[in-house]
Amino acid sequence: MKDIFFCPEESNFYSNCLENLVLRNCENAESIVEFGSGDGTPVINSLLRNKFEGVIHGFELNTSAWKAANLTIDEYNLANKYIINNSCLFKSSKPQAQYLVANPPYLPAPDPDIYMPLLFGGIDGATITNNLLSLGYENVLVLISSFSNPTSTIEQAQEQGYTVSNFIVLPLKFGYYSSEPKVKQHIEELRNHKMAFYSGEYYFLAGVLFNKCQNNTTDLSKELAQVMTSL
Ligand SMILES: C[S@@+](CC[C@H](N)C(=O)[O-])C[C@H]1O[C@@H](n2cnc3c(N)ncnc32)[C@H](O)[C@@H]1O
Image (cartoon, rainbow, N blue to C red):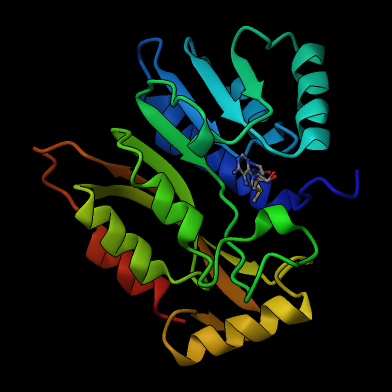
């Protein structure tokens, strides 16, 4: 199991964001696409705690994680609500859905040769997140890290016609993956270029709900940018 993403604090936060920013607003049988399901626990826990009538289609490239997720899905009889493909969302024919949700790979590094290459988020850490915002989904919930060029993500969202309708911020300690010397040194360099924001051992992780709704009067983009660059 060593090769499966493991960070309960982060996964629980993602699960809470899913519940509070997405599942509780779903009144009909909405469909949801998830990028990077991991071992599936965040979605499974949310499904067990909430009444959700729709279907979640996950995508997970890591075969060990995908297998582990399916075992738990079967254990809780959720096979009709949570279906995971062992493939990459970007390379598949994208399912139609009201929501795209993800705790995406966001580690910045000079190259993908890090503890877990599938957590590589491109040189500034924001590449996959920003690509997720170009797929055209109406509502997108993504976790954004303050050390992964957060400003570029907020700008990308604006360019794609999204507003920030809500967000939740968690101060998080650098963990096993982000403390890898190669990653940490790279983050320090990004900080000199105002592309990474952290203070001591802490950075911010935000669960952000973007949507394309034209008559959305509240856009919290400025507030989000302010918080994410404040450390
Ligand atoms: C930060 S982890 C999140 C896992 C889980 N959602 C959680 O919060 O515990 C990101 C996940 O994305 C997966 N991943 C990375 N690139 C992917 C891709 N192109 N397609 C599908 N999954 C991918 C990784 O294997 C990893 O499990």
